[in-house]
Length: 224
Image (cartoon, rainbow, N blue to C red; front, side, top):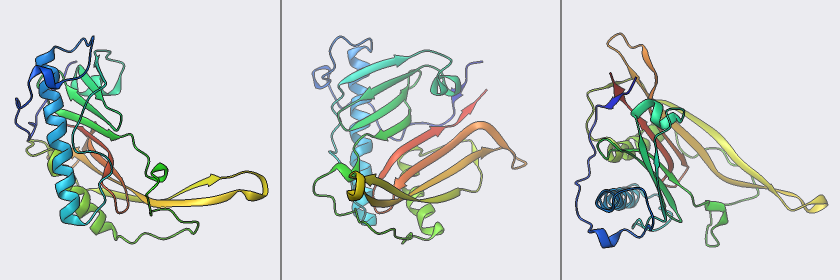
């Protein structure tokens, strides 16, 4: 069964022209590609503005230049099962997934890795506890949720926040050491019915490293 989205993109369409899109030999029509690219750029700009307000670090550029644009029509793909056919646009730094039906963004991933940035100061060799409370993490995530989902007729349940220590091993042999990155927060809002029971698979989830902008957002709200 094909589902339709019940919420609208907060971002106005239309600012870019066909020549602004850089993908060649794409199955996505140029005019649609330009609209998706413009929406992605506006989302990044809104995220950067929110980071500045909340004193978080924003990684990467605020303009989106797609290198690939791939229509996803396979119902076996998770995105398509929930929201119908999608289009995935990927740049060297970010990946956006849009609904083909109405251009609403349903997914975002920052493909940059903080620990690989040469100027990053967010790495240590000591494991550190979270500097955020659960309520603070939810408050931060809510600010970014509002960028991706402005309106929704769907009722959301109480958000769930989970924190995990983020470590890597580097070096080899006797020189091997543990590298600690900023801790990971994952905040998720389930869609619920009038009785508070969750809908299967329907949720908004935001993942972020403490002190940084979200690196992954999934917004799957549907209705039959």
